Image 1 (cartoon, rainbow, N blue to C red):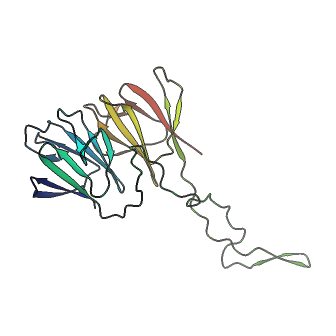
Image 2 (image 1 turned 135 degrees about the horizontal axis):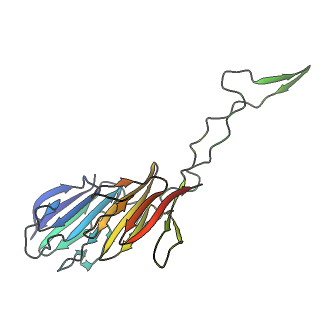
Length: 242
């Protein structure tokens, strides 16, 4: 499990395991990581951890957020990165191997390699344990040996179609592991593609995404076929296709 090590002036204050999909950092008590210092905004930054990846998002803080000395808005955290908030430092530690050096885009490409998911095969003509020959009159015709168990079917591809505004009717295929949607500074969410489906998670903004008229909370929410999602005033329909 990834963690942050909070320090100030070289003195380690505490270790913080990243146990939630979304954790906020800020001065106010409701934050998951509270740093009670005037240099820190009430809600300064957010950490989104999905599967083995963690992303840092500055929430339009007054004094900004630095990673390894550079100001950031969104940053894909890698092992050893140092986040600076005023006089405080948060070192990101991951016990996973750095398998994707250089892949730092907030919107990441799919991890699955070609061939790792195979289309479902047709059922075998004869089940295991049955005779391996078929008789037609006096002619004995060998039947093919029982087929290996069918591989799992490839998951359906998720798509969002814009329902209102200037882009109404346009479609976006959710082929990446993470797809960001919304307006920076207003409201941003991510849709995550996982082996068992698609999930939407709030990232930025005071308003949370709305699904089928219901406002979500900070936790990841599974998306079902034909769900209607609203982000930053834009309505879109999520659906699955082959």
